[in-house]
Image (tube, rainbow, N blue to C red; front, side):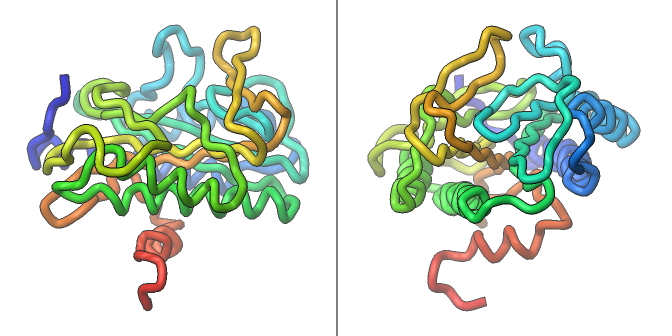
Length: 266
């Protein structure tokens, strides 16, 4: 069942989102070559709890950590462990916070030191996909308009859009209805209304869209071994347009620039 959130509930989710955003901002600065993903996870849990929240991911369907840490060809759901980050890696960090019963969910892909031009472009295009999808979250638009915007931009650059995993509604649970594919034809499905809160999360591969799950039952990797990037925000549909509830202060100006329709002057 799809539930619309009241302004009071959206404000609670915004407070949750500030914790998630602050934690991701800290991890972006902390992640360096030589660090293990387990060390990053410990930093994330400490941050979320000190800011008054509860790490949503811990125990979710048995998941053992506060973040998902996915490296290079790992698309999502990488379990933190003793793997040390190396110069040139791409690291996708996904995290969530529960505060006063409401969840926020966000992800970012970052470079570890200097990365290849291919990796840098994949990150840039994937973040652009996210912001173009968010721009479609207008009252009266259709749910499929979001995925169509993501798919069009990604495929224009020759990338594969993951189909086996999708975005989702967010509220008192991390995964609520509706599911939000990152692909599809425009003008179909649910008509967007004020109060709908969604996690939009393009997962874009440098190669094909095909993925597989490793033996740990969690980690999703590209089937062809190519790089993958993942960006995510929790966003509310409002009568004034989409409201990003997990916007990171360190990225605010960059995200705002991407959010402007293409061709519009600053």
